[in-house]
Image (cartoon, rainbow, N blue to C red; front, side, top):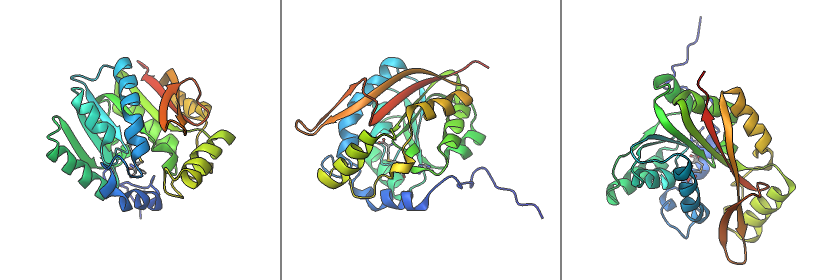
Length: 244
Ligand code: SAH
């Protein structure tokens, strides 16, 4: 007997406990003072960075692990035709409802894995974003390969995640979850954090050339984030699909 896995229903690269964490909070995605405050705060910074490198107007953009659509929505408002995908049903419903209420143009949401969409629509996107998601999946390299398959040659793939460094443990887990209560306890697991060199390696193996690296740092006194060169906690990579 042979078992075949349909690409559309193949959701093996997912941790149900991770999805449940986000589903439980789904009703608060658009509350800027909620657990999602950090994502709302960093959103204009990452949006500008992406839009400067790959101007979004008129582009086909895919946002993988979109959650409630904080970035997807903002990219659509910059003029992109944006599709957000996630595997948490509740979050997608919240994203859709927000788009309806806020009358966001050119935005769509779908419950499908990155790997399944890659099988369905290879090379179909000008820009792919995958933000704050890789540290929540069992096999992040598989997501990186799917991103590469989804973007057209010369197109851009943007990643952001948390570094696996002592400073990230101190800031992203102890600081954010235990001292400042910015995030619920258990949001992040240290072993799942990813060093920039590891992510760059997976990207390179998937024909994604690393072009830019930025860090995001949080100032607990001013309660503000800034983008800079310090990649020791949160960081972003901009990669470009090779013409192979
Ligand atoms: N990218 C969004 C949300 C980050 S939170 C932003 O930066 O604003 C992490 C998201 O990843 C959650 O919405 C969670 O449901 C989603 N996620 C976790 N595992 C996933 C998987 N295997 N496939 C798709 N989405 C996943």
